[in-house]
Length: 196
Image (cartoon, rainbow, N blue to C red; front, side, top):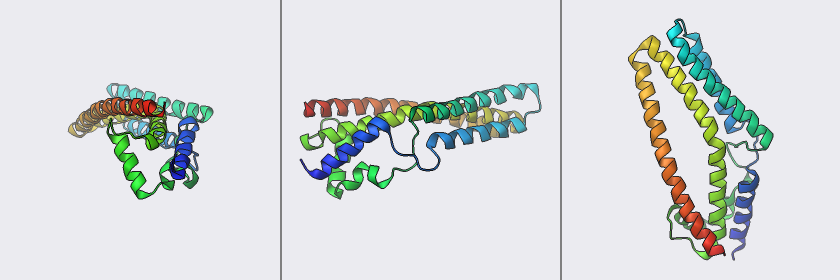
């Protein structure tokens, strides 16, 4: 097997097991900060008891995102914005190898023996990152729903339009995520079979 593929597989295995090194702020911390900001913006405009419901929804989202961030810090599941150079699996591959890897990651039934271990490790890393990101995204969504509800109560149509847009995006992301997860499992099963 090519030394580049071996090195890339080791890097992807490391990322799948422990994640990337966070330098500066993590994705969870940034989203928690945004969620708290949106909650504060929604609370500032609250003047009537009917608007309080939206502030409570936003506050629940903010509490969730902050809790997820704290838990991720304690368990070592923080997601970096960028991987450091020595951690990037694709950095060691040639352009042709990167194209071949992307092709095999995208389509079930295309995994070949020299890439099978790397494909499996890359999918494991993607799934680990997805599991770490989903709870904070749910909290952020709740904060945005609370903010859009507050805007709707004060500005009418703009807030309701924002809320309908948010719900449409949430449904779209959920459907696409489920389809992508099924595709990844099919590719991973083939990669697992090819390495046995």
